[in-house]
Amino acid sequence: WLDLIISMLNLLRLYYFWYTSIMKVRNLYDNSIIDVATDELHFRVSVYGLLEENEQILVQRSSKSKQFSLPGGKIEKGETIENSLVREFEEETGLQVQTVKLRYVKEDFVKFEDNESYHSILIFYDVKRVGGQLRNVYDKEESIEIEFFPINKTLKQNLQEIFRDIVWEIGSFFVKQT
Image (cartoon, rainbow, N blue to C red; front, side, top):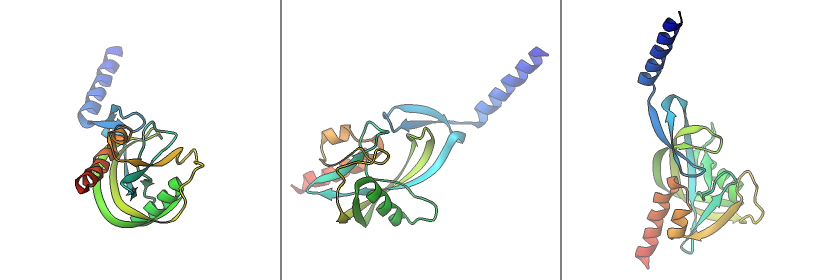
């Protein structure tokens, strides 16, 4: 009987291996790459704002990450993309913004601080400040650091990987203009 049970367990393991593929997923806490079964991925659509002033870009860091990100986050059910961005931006920075134009859309596979892994669609808008004040006392859940940062190699090294390409593209634009 034991041999039969072991054989059945091995067959189940093979079945699971054949029908479950593994994805490489980026851990947003430390940018490491981990393996995650596709059936463990959740779907997430999020929106982020690019606020540029004086050739600097606004970035924020939460207590759950070692690196900076752009203000923004998950779009809630029943919420428009633009309303979500305005809400997230104010929650994280204290600033009220208005969307200017759609800049970029990309997908990525990431593990967030909630320990869940996601197949993410990320939407990026250029935004402009229309009110509010940049917080100097930060909400530990939302942001522990918020600052305008020059777009340079230091920022690139301290920015979460999923944001580097879009921010670097903006930085290249500034360099070409001067």
